[in-house]
Amino acid sequence: MIGKPESLRDAYGEELTRIGDADRDVVVLDADLSSSTKTSIFGKKFPERFFNMGISEQSMVATAAGLALSGKKVYASTFAVFLMRAYEQLRQSVCYNNVNAKFVVTHSGITVGEDGATHQIVEDVGIMSGLPNMSVIVPVDAPETRSVIRHLHDSTSTPFYVRLTREKFPVLNDADYEFKVGKSVTYRDGSDMSIIASGSMVSFSLEAAEQLKGKGIDARVINMSSIKPMDRDAVLKAARETGRIVTAEEHSIYNGLGSRVAEITSETYPVGVSRIGMRDTFGKSGRSWDLFDYFHMGVSDIVRISEEAFRKESSYENIS
Amino acid sequence: MDSSRLSDAKIREKAKQIRLKSIEMVYTAKSGHPGGSLSIADVLATLYFREMKIDPANPVDPDRDMLVMSKGHASPALYATLSLRGYFPETLLPGFRKLPSKLEGHVHYGVPGVEASTGSLGQGLGIAVGMALASKLDGRKNRIYAIIGDGEIQEGSIWESFMAGSKYRLDNLTVFLDKNGVQLDGFTDDIMPMPMIPERVRSFGWNVVEIDGHSIPEISSSISKARECKDKPTLIYAKTVKGKGVSYMENNPKYHGNAPETEELYNQAIKELSTQ
Image 1 (tube, rainbow over the protein chains, first blue to last red):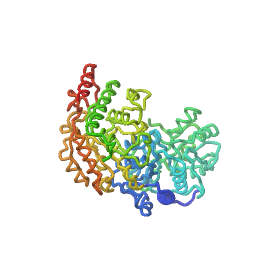
Image 2 (tube, rainbow over the protein chains, first blue to last red):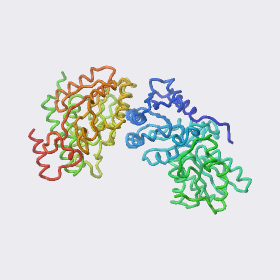
Image 3 (cartoon, each protein chain N blue to C red):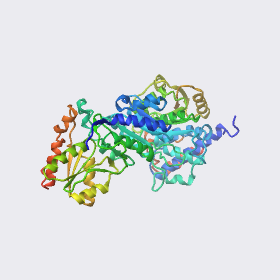
C-alpha cells in the first residue's frame, strides 16, 4: 500500500507542461523560485508563456489576476510562506474578482526541514481557507498531484490553493487515480475509530493503523486532500460509524483540517475529535522526518492519541 | 481625423457631467470619495469619450481597450463615466453604496464596463500588467490603461509592477498618475515626500510624459505619445487639483473621503460645477 517516495513538485512541473502543451491559454508565473517549484520545466518548454516576476510576490499575484481577467488559465508558484505576503492581492485581485488562477505552492509545513522556522509555514491552510471563492487542496502524493492539476485545469475556473512540499512523499495512489474536488478517499476501512489525515500525515496514519491493529483497534484511515470544500459526507459517516475521530495534519491544529472536521461533526453529529498537528508553535531546523517526532506528530504519537481516543479518555491536553 | 471625434468643448462638457454625477452620488450616499473623483474627471472623459476603442453594447469584445481604476476609491467618477458612456442607465447611479445596488463603494467587477474590482491600493497596476501581457500573447492590438494615485505609489507593490512593465516591454500599457497632492491624512508631501516621481519612474525604464491633467488637448496628445512609444510602457504624470471644480474641496484633504455635510454645501458644489 505504501509505495516508494516520489516528488510532488516534480509531478507538478511535468503535469503543468503536459496541460500547457495541449492548451495555449495556460500561462505560468513564478517569483524567482522556479527551479525549486519546478515551474522551470514549463518555462524551458514554453518561455513565451512563462513569467518570472522576480522576488515580487505582490506583483506576481496581481499580474496573475490580470492575465486571468483577460482569459488566460493561470498557474502561479512560489514557496508557501512567501505567497502569504500577497494575501491581500489574493483576497481582492484574485478571490473577489473570482478569476481562474491556481496558486500551487511548494515547501509548505515542517518538511522544509533544515531551512527552519522562517520557511516552515504551518498556518497557510487556515489563511487560504478563510478566503471566499478560494478552494484548498493538499495532495498526498505524486499521482494525486498530477490528477489535481489535470482536474483543476479541465473542470474548474475559480481560484485554488494547492499545497505541495519540498520532501518526496510515499506513493499511495495508482497512476490512474482520479482526484475530485470535495471528495476524500478511504485507504483503509475500520470500525473502531477514524483517522482523517492530509499530506505527509496520511502515510504515517496508515503505519499507525497497522500498529493499532496489533492492539486490537480497527482504525479507518481517510485521505482528506480536499480541505475546502471538505467531504462532509465522509466525515459524518466516520463519526456515525466509528464514533471517534483523530485528525492528523502537517499544519497548525488551528484553522486547518482538524478544525474543519470538528466544525462539521459538532454542527451535525458531535463525537470526540482529537487533533494532531502543530500546537500553536513555529517550526525548527532539523531533518524533516525527525521534526515529526520532535513536535509529537510522528507515528508513535498517532498510535498513542488514537488509543486514548478509542478508550474515550483522552488526556491530550487542550491549549486554547 | 475621425468625424465622430468629440471636440475639446464637448469632452469638457462630459467631464462636467462626470463631476456633477460624482457629487450627486456621494451626497446621496452620504459617504464616498469626491476629491479624487473630481481630480480625474477630465482624464476619464477624454479616455472614454475620445481615445478608448470600446463599445458599450459589447463590453466583452476581446479587442476592446481596457482600463483598470487602480485608485478604486474614485468609483463615483468611473461609475458616472460608464453610465454617461452608455454601459448602464444613469438611473442606477443613486444606488451607489446602498443595498442592493452593484455600485459598491469601491470599483466593482460586475458593473458593466468595469474590468476589475479595486479598492485596496497598489494592486490595479499589477492587474493591468497582466492584461497587457495577455494582449501581447494573443497578438491583440488593444490598449490597456490604468489610473493610479499619487498617494497610492507609496505602496511598494506599485514599484514591483513598474519593474515588470519595463521587463516585458509593455508598450500597450498606458498609466495615468493622478498627481493631486492629497491623500486621506493630508498632503502627500507631508505624509511621505516623494520628489522627482517622473525621474524615478523613468529610471525604472518607462516612457514618462508630464501634462496638465485638466487640459483635454494635453491629455489627448499624451495618449498619442504613448501609442507611438515602442518597447516601453508609458506613465502619464498628470498634474491635477484634488477636488477640482468645487472651491471648498480643492486641495482640502477633508474631502478625500467625505461627502458634503450639508444641503447648503451640496448646493454650492452643484452650482459651482454647473457654471464652469
